[in-house]
Length: 96
Image 1 (cartoon, one colour):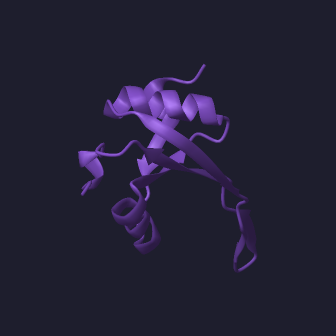
Image 2 (cartoon, rainbow, N blue to C red):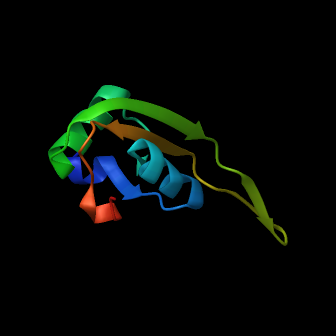
C-alpha cells in the first residue's frame, strides 16, 4: 500500500482546472499511477477533510523526447478530477 502523503502528488493549476473549480466545485490533482478511484477518494477525504461525490481519472502516456543524439521519454501521468459536495472546498488550492 502507498503512503497517504505519496498518493496525491500535487494539485494542477491551469486555466481549465480553475474554471472547473469555480463553476463545478471540481479539483484536479496529479496522483500516483497505480491508484484507483476508491483509493483516490479516500486519500482526498483524509488529507483535506472534505466529502467527495465523484472521481474521474485521466491517464496520459509520456511523450518521446530528443535532445541531439540522446533520446528519452517523459513519464506517464495520471490526473484525477474530484467533485466535492455542495458547500465544500479545498482552501489549500485557493478554493472559492
